[in-house]
Image (cartoon, rainbow, N blue to C red):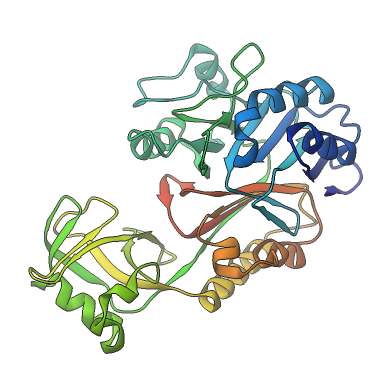
Length: 383
């Protein structure tokens, strides 16, 4: 069990706890967290071993801390300051005090956005542009469309991720008087521009070839790239060794879709979901159309570590002092699966930026700005 307090007067505090069941895990967290007088927003991430008890956990957290508004979700792994917790019942909690009215919890969205509730509309009138920390249900086919729609409707910047779980997919984004745990949509919290923040995105894959143009495609199946059979171009980019046995590319080679207009060379990583050697076709985990750019990328520790350090260096230059608190959302395929079992990803953040309160989780897809990413890490700091 461990926890971290922000510098005196910062009004952020975090703790992480483990235990044999939800009661002992909550107690471990609360004992370390201590009094949180004046705090008015709680961030809560729980491991999926505890997902079935999420209602009890949120209810107890509300009652003991006195904090009524909570945001968070379930993860197969969760993040804390310098620490990653997988394969055990665990809770990471952060309590924070914001100026009254500087944040707002809107009603969850389960379908396309047709408008916000009156109280959200009223709040937005005096608080735009906004940063939104959101969590989505990956089982809802509308989630992919809700994310860019929500960003446009808010005129703001989204951060967050999709719930990852082997059991229940709970989110904690309701106000007092609403269900403490919800499923099926997108929920979260809006912060006004009066709340100073810094955000960063780090990629987990590195391009291995040039940018190409998709010339024939249907749905998620790529037929031709640069006027040639898609598989021929793919084999050239990955090299002769891998091309001899395409079974070896699974989990190592991915499609990367460059983002039009990005001034940082940003791209969306998508899984290869099928290869047809008889017809020279490639299927990826996203819809594509002729004219879209594509390249291929590989996942490896050295490039992921280097890009994480690059992102932290960029953020560090923007800081005038230690962060008050933070939320980190990393891909489920990162963490131990990429960086090893010694919490290296979260330790790198702590060693670079300092020992400040931080919570988060390992997601089934990461949200930054108005897009759903994969194999990335999204860091949000409250300054």
